Length: 264
Ligand SMILES: [Zn+2]
Image (cartoon, rainbow, N blue to C red):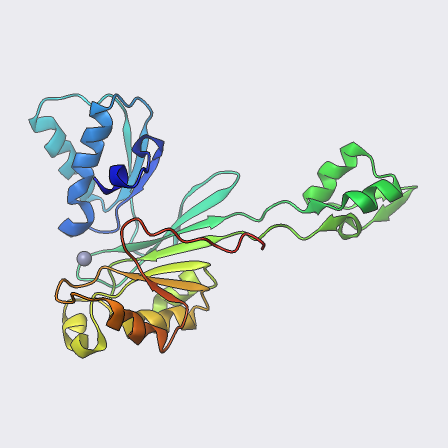
């Protein structure tokens, strides 16, 4: 419903990640897949989730007797270590274990290093040929007038490769820091304020301050808080609590768009 409201095209989705099997994190999945089906989808979807999810979905769809018009390829998550789930020529997709009441994974999407940019002025001056530029963009030296020349002489640094890490739901756990270090954006749950730190501990959730501490220690560039308890009618206090530790903190809301620094 929210995807439709905000103009996100659900048929463009090719991978779905389910962190854990608490209802607020996966009850919408059957509806989403069913809507994709009703809209006549034929392109397959890869679904990552806890092993039990495959059977749950199978039961939901088989009782109705309807056949799906597209293939759902299921891949079970590992809750033991950081795992590469998927990669193509541009991105890597990782999962890593969080600390929650039931097995839960966080996720990270990471752009691969981008090609070096050609310094066309320098190339022209030195007479670098077109076919040599392919070597330069991939960081390989070239031969000019019988001598090997360092590729850096004719290239500019690659554009920045962005990364996004997603941690929900989790208790405060410093073991996740190496998994998310230097992310451009970290989403971290902040179900409670520090006033309810005891409740956070009991339910394996985090406070806003704890999320900020993780962001600071992991040296991320931006923190987005979410998964707020419904007891808070205003989330400004949670944002303030986090900003005292990590100033670049935002509170997530549906439809929020974040622009990353494209000059990098
Ligand atoms: Zn949960």
